[in-house]
Image 1 (cartoon, rainbow, N blue to C red):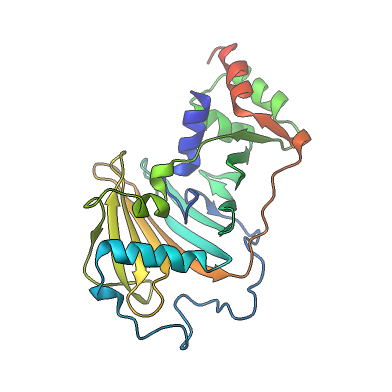
Image 2 (spheres, rainbow, N blue to C red):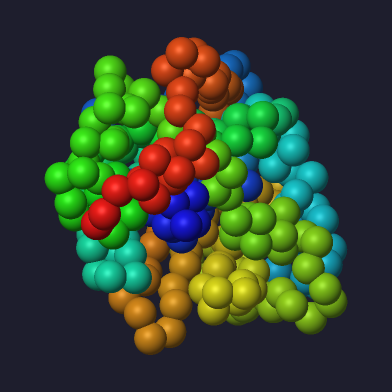
Length: 266
């Protein structure tokens, strides 16, 4: 129960192949400076294949080419904004590294400072006691004491919270017909081709691929009928994304936190 609820805290909106778009902005920088030859602006430099017309390509071709174009970039930084399913304002900023799909985000959720690292198949989440109480639906002094004891000193909670159905790779691997191509549209100033898929939870995910030139994915939006969920995330190329797991002595396993919570009321 704890891991499932905790995963929902940050994973209902994603950026890139990792799922972090549910955090309000923090002043902490998310990515290192760009490497030479990687322009910061969305889109491509004049010599990068701008003669390509991506609007005429079929869905499968465009997905494959967009996936290959992403793989050619060392890292991306992202910023996002919107509201979650409960109508809370959300913002995000962070970066993800293409070589191993590592991601980091720093920000705020519901007024609470929150940090996320995803690397080597695990996610690490750090937040204050009140944030954990709200995320797990607990409100007792005993539950608060569990969090205070186990997470003292700014410890991280480690688990597997990512939703593989919430990634660009899930579009590439989708069954024929699951992804549709929309009419060309402008996304944050770039002419793009939208690729759309509805996941198993009913969330409509739209990835925006540059209409001309190298078919990079430059953005993503999500929505869910019957809820307030609306997010937009913008991607920019970066030269690197510095991500590492927290030190072992600063990590607590999510299952152990869950076990401790089950021993107390509320």
